[in-house]
Length: 258
Length: 158
Image 1 (tube, each protein chain N blue to C red):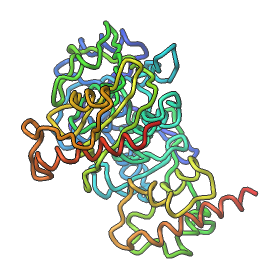
Image 2 (cartoon, chains in turn purple, brown):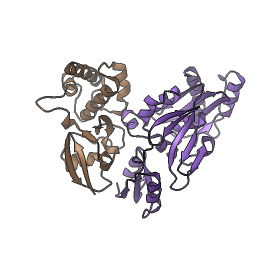
Image 3 (cartoon, helix red, strand yellow):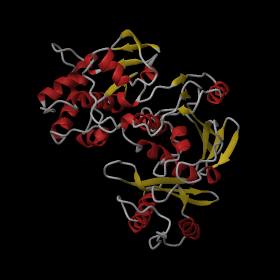
Image 4 (tube, one colour):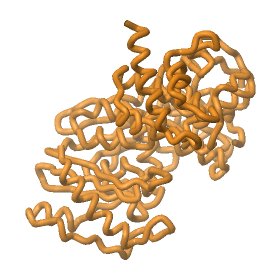
């Protein structure tokens, strides 16, 4: 790994200042479970790293109809602490493996927006509010395709507020080797209607509006087929296979609503 | 940069670039070569160590990120004369062949006891071993070893 200047700020303002004042390319470091492997393989070679884990952004608290989770909260802590949303806790318990869950963070996953990541599906289906050091975004506006979000340069996610649904569940089909989601479907029933989000299948997380409409209308979702046109087609799976998996994962998620 | 790490209960001061991984400090600077590097891509778990009791991959953590925490490596778990119950269980159950993945497997077993207690089922162990790869034994005896090691830890603490 190429060396870098390391900054370990103790406040959000000091972190953004360190980022802005860095000599060359700067990057934020949270759990590091995407960034460090990328740096080891020299896909990323930042000149400065700004460590966000000293900012006090960890923790889970309920405020009315939202569950707020700090950006640097570990997957392992969401798995045990997000009891208000069992589907979300279950999703966190299935990210990576036990060791990864002891380091990886919610904010890191959402900011990275890997097209096969789990958390973006939960954020979208649970109508999340993504709060940053300079404002907030609705999840519908936040995720903008492969590794792309609404975050500005140097903007820091501070916490994410998930709408507590009546019921929700997440089902994913893992790639046999990488264990990332080939397809993951998060289904949530809110007082205002159903939301269904799909990860892994396309170039970024997206809402499956036909499934939402069918669930809202109370019609059978068994025959629903997602159009394969815009889905990923690669050596791991064809677009048609992924489209089929979306239906299977939807069915599994609906069967495990909690 | 200068950093102070607490490894197996001892404060160790090392001088290393910021980009140095925890596993590199352990092996190359402190000579604690029981922690292995298997895949280098965060998948195999051979480099597992405990940081404040929780198992992490030492190849996917900067050494500086471990400052202020208690790091336990396989050397800190037991000794040649007195193996930790989890190590002893691997010996008795023949939970290893070449031994390369074993330190990480033992640490994964420690993580399971931390999270789930000493009464582990083979099904749970199999599930929780997702982040550890073995290329020799086929896992059967590793699962047996962890179930037995956890139970032995209960006896030890009783």
